[in-house]
Image (cartoon, rainbow, N blue to C red):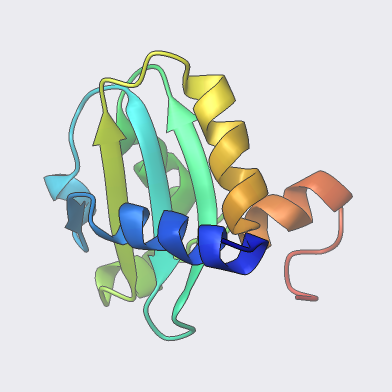
Amino acid sequence: MNLSGIRMQIIQEVLNLPRTDEIRMLPDSSGLYFVFDKQRNEMIYVGQTKNSIQKRIYQHTHARHFICPEEANDKRYWFYYQLEIHNLTIMEAFFIAALTPRVNRIIRTGVNRWEL
């Protein structure tokens, strides 16, 4: 299997995870989370939290990091999540490398988020 085939397989695995488009329905526990933009049809961010996925996504929206509150309220995004991950930092790095989400690339390179 080539690299793009492996990437597609990983994307399919993520898309099979539990998801919601309502922040209040996200779990109040630690884990990995993935933000999928329905309009662009792309995974835009992978993150992890040792506390609450729900609270972390809420922070992203209300600080306007990359999720506009109005867009979240309009259910523009799917929020996928995976709980009970033991090596959160390693798994987050793996998924970022495999999926290359737009917002993670912006954070890493320091490019203005509105330029991509």
